[in-house]
Image (cartoon, rainbow, N blue to C red; front, side):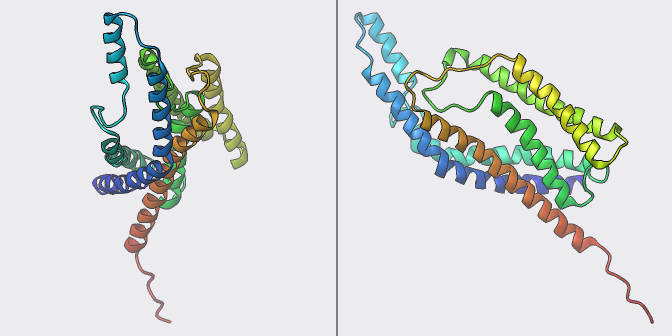
Length: 260
């Protein structure tokens, strides 16, 4: 059964990845192109260096940040590779999700596969995507200092861990509360928010948006980035649950007609 769920998760994850890739291509790539154009325009407007040594350094820096046709990977290739990246992401997520789903099935959450898949996908989106995004949102090209990429990545990973830990705490709290369903939900919600809010307040903020960068472009890029993840997890949860319900419906025993 676990093998069947894993294969199902891989295939549905791949499909959901392509759906999310289409959304990112339509809504995200135009913002990336606009940000790259701003970055290259700013690089072209920089004054020429005074010495030969400075000129060599400047040339190397400009080439390292070039995103046009002369880049190591051109923009058309990058756009085509977007679907490869989202497809691989879907495969990885689908396999992990299927294993977690197999552990939850019949032990926690809704009894039906469809409802459990939707609830699990929504929980994963909130814990792994929304929680870190609200603290450290995605940035387009031309935003962010290359020298701080390691520290920014580490902080983002910390927020992902906090989101997952908060879910575990919320689940444990809900199982220990013996009151009614609303009391359990409130207790679980509070248990989830306490570590998340604490991390938001205690972890350092990162604001490396250059002065004069268009606020509308930054906002639209971040919305497209979050929207891509939302589309992926929605498509994955709906498809995984729908297939699970269809399989469960076919395997259910037919009612025995009465002899009377």
